[in-house]
Image 1 (tube, rainbow over the protein chains, first blue to last red):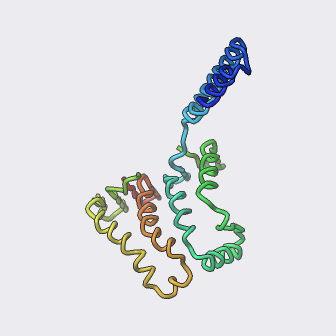
Image 2 (image 1 turned 135 degrees about the vertical axis):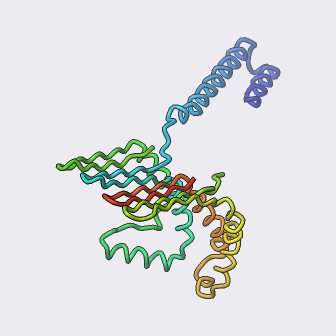
Image 3 (image 1 turned 180 degrees about the horizontal axis):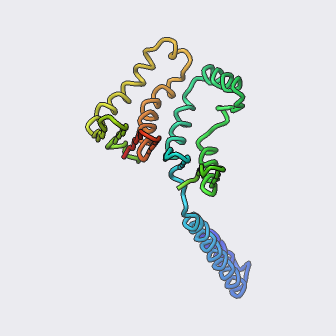
Length: 144
Length: 92
């Protein structure tokens, strides 16, 4: 910004542009700066609007006969687990992938990065599963 | 920074037997846990099998990562109940 202003004044000094032209250029520069500041503020405000952050995964299962399960898992475990999992040597990771593949779970742990986990958790914040059985059993899975 | 869990509560209710209700102050074990996390990379490095396969930086950060995993347990709650018994575990 400072460079542009100095260049305009330099051009005016050298007589390349008139006073009016310099004024117009400086005005235009000022408007650009104003627009940039407004867009920067908009970017800063965006995360504040999306304030709902998924901290826990909650699983509630209640049966017909006083049987119930209520589990609250911090999402931070997932993040920390992925970071720790990244330290597993590739040979061991391949074995884990093969073992999971034998169970029918085709998951490649090498593609799992903290960034993808964050995206996954962000997506989970909107998720809510509510299942009701014929005999009053309910299963609820949601984020809080 | 996330602080590690400071209290573990375990409650076991079983019909016809004595109830167990434990409040375990985990903060008393924090120094031991930190020590364990610091010694863990050394133990990994001493393991000849792992030394060949793991990179040096991975071994070094494994201790703090393990500590972070423990800290991430704060807020975990498990409450499982049946007709006659109930198990409740919570970490603060």
